[in-house]
Image (cartoon, rainbow, N blue to C red; front, side):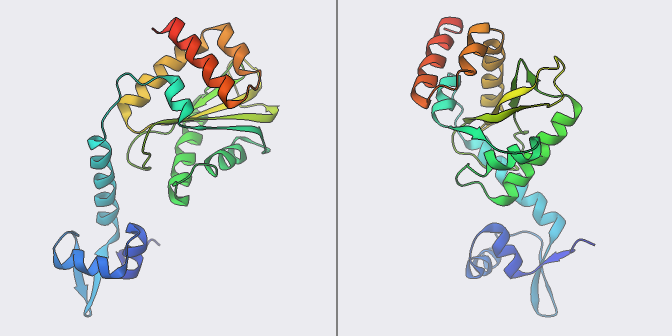
Length: 222
């Protein structure tokens, strides 16, 4: 059974602050739902979870949106993994998310769960490329949208509707919903071009890949 209340120590770990900071927040009434039980401060777990989620959403909403953001921009801000290892989609995601700096284990687990749920409904893989993205709902905090590309060590069956095994996984971690929609729309357009698919499967180095995407994106989506 899940705990109904959090202790000061547990809340400090959840907020990633010291216990002294938690007490200061209590005194300043910055933390809602704090009550004393047996002389000790306790916090309603469910209400605290909702409060933390709402706070994260507010921070995301405050982040400025780049309406001119391009695929080349998020690619430059992301990373490329060559010969990604794993026996299945779950393990591949573990390797990719493990490479993302400043991403907590809880955030990585939440992202993976969202993606696996979406992929269980319908695979995002087409023509050997799989474009995955979690819901931007405050379950993770990314400063600056980024696109991660993983070239798989071997093609895998991700249940694609065109029955083509997946060779490349593209994972989009957007800073906010608007940028996610913009990037996914631009990527969808690029996916329609044989030139883009062919270029992606060449396993170019980082500089060459960004240059090629910049050129093609400029030509198709000026």
